[in-house]
Image (cartoon, rainbow, N blue to C red; front, side, top):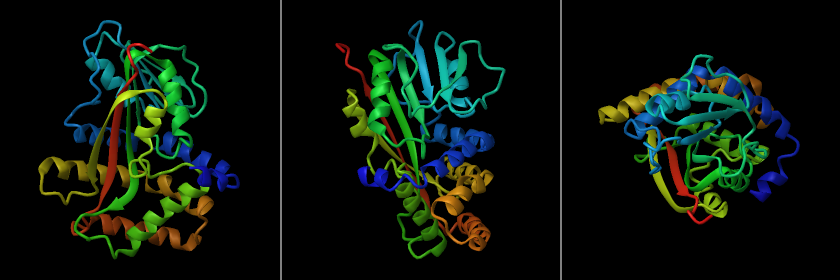
Length: 294
């Protein structure tokens, strides 16, 4: 990370509009992402072994986006108090009475008091965090003793197990764009494959950290019906806001030729819709506990 941060100064400011645009314009995409990530966990909102039926359960969702995770959690756990934080106030006005939202930057010092939450959930913070150690230190401070933190991240780099994308030039351009952009802005996009979550979580003080690695098909090519649905939804999420996800990266960060951008998007859509393209994204879920004696 130190080398990435050293090269980030000239373009770091360019990354901020990109991240904010993804949050404010991608509400449909956020809901699709929530759908396929929940399917990926077998219809569960989380995997951390929290005491779900505890009275007065306090929960924080960091980087909540549209707030859909908070809303679902609030409906399923009416006795809990659920708080979602985000840079942008894009959440709906009508939510369960036990759910509220606050504007906060997860990358800065959190405004919550020490030992406030039983469970801190964070998901899909891709491109928004440059210091994961600092993030989990804030989570540790705000988590109650015996409480849990969970981090669920998806990398944008396409992979395949059968070589179906190995010689595809469009996929190669996509992967190179995110790799180079991450270096330039000092905010890694390849969080699962760079193993940023678990070491940072342990560095922050959490123990009993467990890692769950998952694959997200891109498109409906999988034979398993559940995975095929996940793949269709993941592709729909990507196509819903494909320009919002790539426009500023292409033009402002990696600064590639403008006249090649639209043809690239068209070729990418065609490639990913082809069921012979067995592409998937890697995801990693990590959860850990703040020691009881802390």
